[in-house]
Length: 476
Image (cartoon, rainbow, N blue to C red; front, side):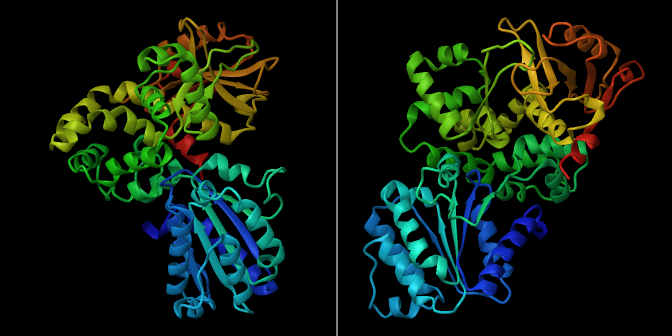
């Protein structure tokens, strides 16, 4: 990876935790979460290889949904291969682990005064196999690990489970000394890594989603179409395999949730259209959405932002890479596997303009949200959109001081992410007319424009006119 772009801050944070262990001789507990394939494991591995100076002994164990006895056996093997103080005893065959209580207690008591790191990757898998593990870890931490020179790092891709790990009613409440959330690359990091201008970097973000392993496949000088042509010509490329692995790991048994996710990925946004296309019962769809939105957090559920309450929910795949994959890669695997990636690229070219116009909306909203507060956007503190049930009114950008039922709307705006066409007078007239359709607006509600190709003279009669460079600046 190019100088480990976008990850140096995370490594510095882990270094600081390890330094505290060295200085105090006491344990530190790090809970790390982030979307699957975002690079958490590689980040920690990089820290262990070059982040700890001087180097410290460590064990890096990755769970794999095996039965408890097998997980403990593999953990013992990893310990034996490590340089931990306990490793020699385990290698000598004098120790076997029959429980996590025994395994972690043994490592803590064998530490002596030697600072060391214990990493447990895919921690939620271990909790699946042994629901008592949280309580076990609490006991071992309180009795032994907290008083030992140990940095314990728990890593998990199940964001809901890892977030809940430290809630008030859970055994580990109050124990972690640090909770880390590893995010995908933002557009600025993508631009830096790929050496792309702002507009092209944002387009690349809509395809790559900021996933490090996939981003590094985009070689310097490549266009987006070069990248897609190369990746889609190889059924085993990281770009293709990444989506398959995410779905297999997240939905090993939940076929309905995966079916609903694919339906949303195809472009359906409302409950009714999702149900109709998926062909499932209303109750089944509700349960699937609870999994996708609440547990997995793979789908966003947004409601119109205005002074009038609305239940007209729009659903979308939250991750940009997976959204692209479900729309263009997954449904076309037959062609890809028989060597006709060129056919798939041609289909993407046909749909790209329409797809990109919608896919860029959440990224633009997040970019503006990062700018707030800003006098250009009035007193807005939140950014959303607005639409009606009939679909006759749909506004790309709405800003307000409150997230739900604000008394007044601070701004409305339009996104024109098209090539070879600037934001013009007709676009300005359309958003000015739509302003009157959004509850909570008045003549002082600001008009905002966002354009990939800039603005012509007629289109500059806006309160704020944003180009790709402005959006990129928000991510620095």
